[in-house]
Image (tube, rainbow, N blue to C red):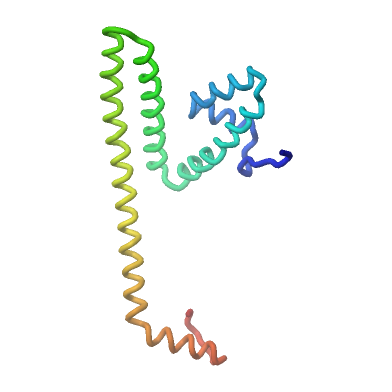
Length: 162
């Protein structure tokens, strides 16, 4: 109470607008809570959305293609929730149709997530290879590195970094 836990730089209005645009279900839930005079719960949802907003904005700046993929996944996820709701409320042929669409969509969502994980794995492998190369180079230069550090600790002039 009394402490502002929003991410720096985002006003409540900005978070609210972002939630409404990118997380419609959360936006609707916030609206229902506010209409039911449950502002504290609505504010909690908005505060929880702040870090997601920051993460996606950072991703957009850092990796626009990654941001596009994340948006695509979020859209597929939202659509799956809508189809699930439609299937639960429908009956007969309409229910079967919604279930078929849901199954197809969930297959696409699964594939998109696996593609994202494969990309992440590729990036991790690249980083591991980079670290392994650095370790091998340092190991090959061990004697020189140790000698430079010894001279540095003895107060001798050292021109190279440790």
